[in-house]
Image 1 (cartoon, rainbow, N blue to C red):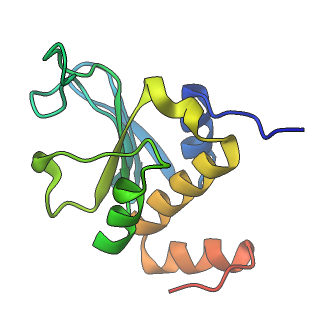
Image 2: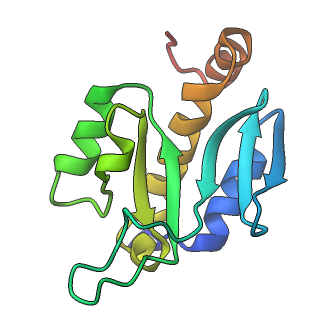
Image 3: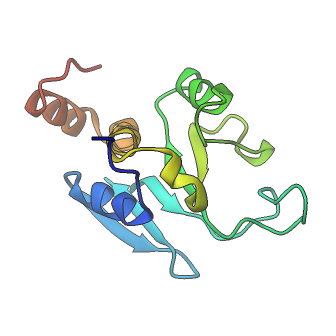
Length: 140
């Protein structure tokens, strides 16, 4: 049986399922998931830097995920097998972008790993260590 494709609802479920998460809302009501007042996943409002190359229309469905390092970012955006991308606006910023319309290119387990990694990138050292220990993962 093939793994279930990811859905936008999974982002909300996975993000709120991480410990110590709060949800704040941006100026347009867009959800921003935070740990220790640091955003780790958020639904971005349409911005001029993320546009459809054919129509010029701003993408209305961009989700931002924090990553741990520039190497992690490059691995995701340079792999043609992933739907992740970045824009010049995010140069030097430890995050990757994903259009909600392409989320089904990931399976739920892949999305879970991205959300967990985003949380780990922003959580305090104590919270990160506790989560990693609880899940039997060697930590940094």
